[in-house]
Image 1 (cartoon, rainbow, N blue to C red):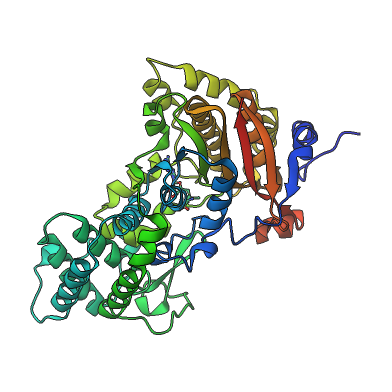
Image 2 (cartoon, helix red, strand yellow; image 1 turned 90 degrees about the vertical axis):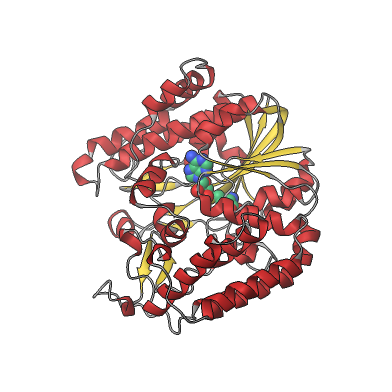
Length: 462
Ligand SMILES: C[S@@+](CC[C@H](N)C(=O)[O-])C[C@H]1O[C@@H](n2cnc3c(N)ncnc32)[C@H](O)[C@@H]1O
């Protein structure tokens, strides 16, 4: 009997994938919600300095390093650097590519602290920064926090003034490690001292901001910049010995930019292990979540839009990158052509897209179709490049979530496994968490409660 999806569409393509990969699906009790999320990093010296909520935890990376014992590892979506810093601390030559400057600054700051930082000099400069913020006097308007639309009203007038003072101090410092660490320390407390809270897809606003009349959120007491910053600087100073022990030795190489460009420059067979977690195909917009931090780093309105477009497609606002990718591969189209073939022949994906197209008028936004096309096409390019870069019998370990749109299950784990197998890998394991995620409440009301798999996959280069 043919099975049908929640929308009465075909599921034959997905059923076939399920039959092929179900045997490789298992629950590994050591992989939990804590290990695949930032929760596991909360108490780790260094990683606890910045709440990069999309991170996975160090323990997951350690387990994979214990199993695979790589000499060279890569994370093409390195975020705050959990994987590369953990590997570097064990003497592994490690490279992280990351497009969000917030993640790169965090990772570099931890690496700086781990490798040769003079703690006394750092603390002396930190005290001078705090004294300057507390000092009386006007601050030239050029140092004012350069807001973009979505950050306006994020701070009280006093905090705005204090941030301008901090910027004035930093602008006059000589470039170098200590300036970078102080800049990072200021960035790391912005959420705490603001009227905002990072919450799922958007920034939520405290009603005191005056920004949203409907907001009922109240963060409670909001610390001043000097209070939050002195706490952070002290925490950093206390953590530095442990950070040196854990992550010191061989600093990772951090590259800022899109892996859709950067991977092309890495040599063939140059990596033993990839540990990574790409963005999920779930609408999540990093540029919104990290709006305050990006504005602190000097991103204006246009730079925000441009960064959003360069990120791996995961939101309905992303436009297709296919033509620009085709152009950039014009001289050596090998990986691009293979990726396109892997993408186009993927039947389960084409099946989901077909069902969604036939219900296009009922979709909240028709652009979810473009989102899914872009996501898998770009991931196919990433997988094709990894297949070239990883040595024979090397591995990819990837954390990712399945998704559901308009009641249609999108088995990201199986679709990527099929794409990976076409491109030269063998999917060895798909470890799923004992408990998946619930579907979104609107989806639940309409299509019933469904559990969505959250998995860690392991593919071997063959
Ligand atoms: C799930 S997070 C990874 C977090 C990381 N594992 C950690 O522990 O911090 C995905 C990351 O991919 C980054 N990203 C999105 N598009 C990218 C691209 N085209 N190239 C490189 N990084 C990208 C995002 O900024 C985000 O930091």
